[in-house]
Amino acid sequence: MEPAEVWGARWDSCDNPLSRRYMEVVCRKQSLVVLAADLNTMSGLNNLIDQVGPNIAALKTHVDLIDDWSAESWAAFCEKATAHDLLIFEDRKFADIGPISRGQMAGVYDIRSWANIVTAHGISGPDIVDGLCAGWSDVDREGGVLLLAQMSSRGNLLGLPGYTDEMVSAGISNQGVFGFIGNGSRPAELTILRGKVGDRKLIWTPGVNLAVGDGEMGQRYGDPHEAIQAGSDGIIVGSGIYKSDDPRGVAAKYAEISWLALTERSE
Ligand code: S5P
Image (cartoon, rainbow, N blue to C red; front, top):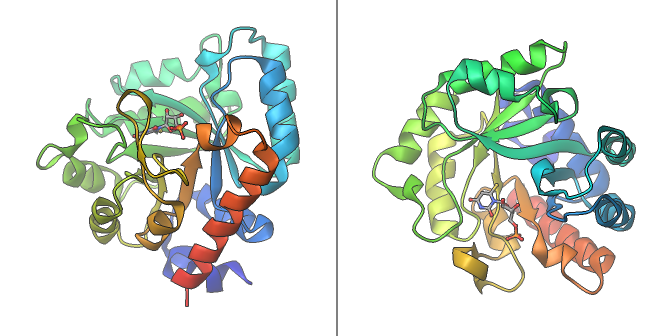
């Protein structure tokens, strides 16, 4: 199926330059799985990508989790991800003022040079997006920011009255914003978020697992099919895949469920 047909109004309306690239990859690979590769060794990460690369649409990293990180091994890992057609999303959850966030895109990890997408909290105000985009410009690259509009964890403060609305209005007109993080564990909340966001931005959702319910340390999980029906454009799945005995088979299962849900949504 053609991306315009599958994605409907989002195909024309999403304004960050990377949005279409992601939507095309989803159609090519028939998967809306964003892998949360939360492992702490380079060999573990490389093995995981070798196994599930064909079944995922984007790769989410936490670069500061890795015990044996080196610039060379990371560069090779990013090359592998790119060969699998994956946008690389560093889930750094930046939260500082614009100029410091810009600087934090550099530093030892030099996130600006390899990440296509990063997460940010809007707690310090909307200029953080411009700070992060300036970070990419500093190395002649373009990226997209995912603003946290909701979270999946129990008791998070983004659910306080007005916060999500403020985040959406801060990000909706900024081209540097790739989209919003919504709560995959609560489809009803997600439907409300989608109503506020409309078709101009993508929504990616963590807190998704085939085993619905409470996870470790306050994490909560909802069903992948329901999340997409409620308006998610990418299901962020970590332990559901990497902790399984059969990561390849399970990633394929999540891919199949997610693609079916998207095609149903577009009917
Ligand atoms: O609200 C959130 C936002 C994020 S980005 N809740 C989350 O769990 N995440 C991230 O999604 C978290 O940092 C982790 O990398 C992933 C969820 O992993 P899982 O193992 O629970 O699927």
